[in-house]
Length: 395
Image (cartoon, rainbow, N blue to C red; front, side, top):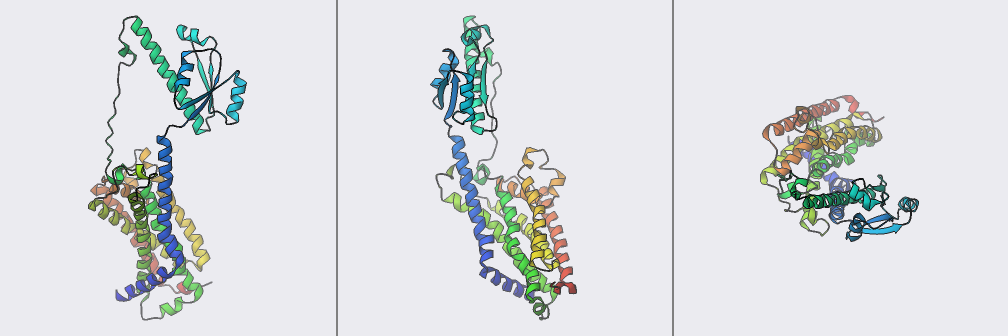
């Protein structure tokens, strides 16, 4: 094992000296996660704040609905004489919705056939918000009108809504479980576990073929298997540190308590010691799988360009399950057997559960076991490739 660790130390020193590795595997994850957090913080701030809705009213006559619109603090109402003028303002972006009342609207409210039409653009989010605001006011006006009618006839106004609805949110609000970025974080950790090593693996083997240094390495007293093991350990180390750097970026940005990001961490950033152990136990076999696959690809390729082409194709096998992990919660499949046995996807799901404290023993063992088996296969392929004479092929 000592020669393998010697190779590992040699490769690690070269990686640390390489600015590409430093930027791609260590600095970029922190920068990217900080960017995502600030973006989410900006969205959170804008969502909480009520937007100033611009409405245009086709003026016909004074009515109760018009009074409600004018009294609303978050609605800016302008009036036009006809519908065509209002629709042109909507097209030009000067208003978010145009409200049109049916003829004899006041009398229509008495007769029960009054109509309010909201003209809006469904491709514009603010226009949809304006339409929803108008619809909400119509519902409120209907309730007030119905209450007045019931009271006039001596009937309880509670009959308007005979069944009430209450909600009780059981979501955990402790630590990262209470943050809206909890679904995004495992996805980024998995991606950087792969892309942390992606930037250097082509030079690790395929690059040595091109430079002619592979022959010198293979005729040294170190066996080929020890060379593979040393390179594998160095690559896996970078992948592991790169994945953890993403988590460090979250903890760093969250602890600084910027005004823009404070709302994303309502109960702090603490993780339990058990959660940290579970995250490490999930990541170690995952980065071993990534390192084994990338090392095999680099050993199979004839040169750096060919290696990068193959690795780009392999990256899609990582990206697609990682992306799907963002949507698995909208289905009933999160705890399905096939999810727990699907590489990358199972790790992303398990990482989220570990951070929220919901990871159960059997899914955890299935996830780790799947990654370990596939990592073993990938490393075995690397050993086989290195023990072939074609490993020296440069062209």
